Length: 115
Image 1 (cartoon, rainbow, N blue to C red):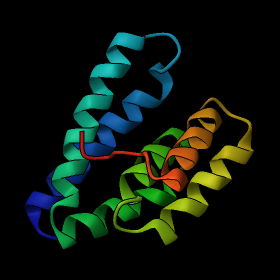
Image 2: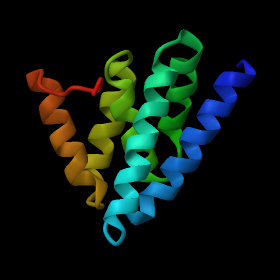
Image 3: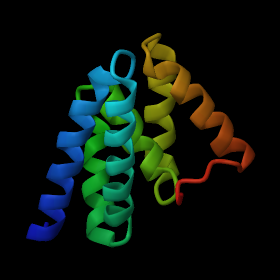
Image 4: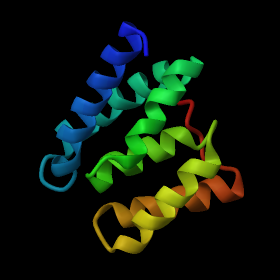
């Protein structure tokens, strides 16, 4: 993995890990982190090496990190991303609701990951 991709992935991971515990108590900060994560993910999705790096996040121990990474992987790797999202949906954790509606949007063709 080249150094630029490694740095971008590290920034994505840091923001995703910081975002996960904030979603219920610190909504404004969580929203800022989410927007920053999405911009970094779009940057990663723009190259083959970046997409491969983003796929490594599907094994992250935090469900929120896995959920966000899986959603970002849907446009280019649905076979890898959908099972991760389905598993999170079944966990019964905070991110399960997001997983449910992400899958609904993906399956009916309304999910837009390019905003």
